[in-house]
Image (cartoon, rainbow, N blue to C red; front, top):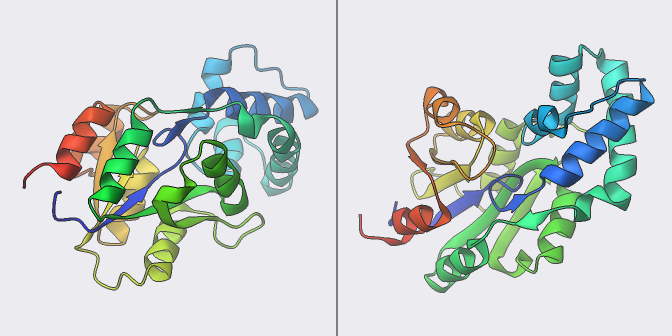
Length: 219
């Protein structure tokens, strides 16, 4: 992957570990419906996929309920959850090294773009990214597929071969493949090796250090 000029990064689970903020925000939203989530670990599955999809899939919400749940989720997330987050260890150094190597770095996240900007600024890593591309708060750009296409368009990448996606969930891999991109799956996020491989990841790495070797090493 040394020859990839453009590197698209997922945010949640890839650049940062947002588990505390996201699970608390989901629990707050569920509480509005009288649903108590006593084990935050059961809510990790919300990290990565679009919220509407997750509320429908995991709790059987219809569209109206899912939209209300998202509204309540964001009520907590805007005030507190967005900062209940941590930068993945070693990621700042990797982003700096890639930037110094002349790579063009882009964030492609299903998180609303306005929130992604806040998170990146909070951790002082916004400076490494040429573009930050996320979902619209109220649609129509919501899915990871749409975000990746939007990111490629914004960056003026017409031919996908010089670009690669880096992410921790199947949505990253599937969206990248639909756009004609290779995708590196990372295991320091919230997807399993099986999930990433079954989705068609070009490569799966376990650590930030291994990711750096793949992106900066020879070959």
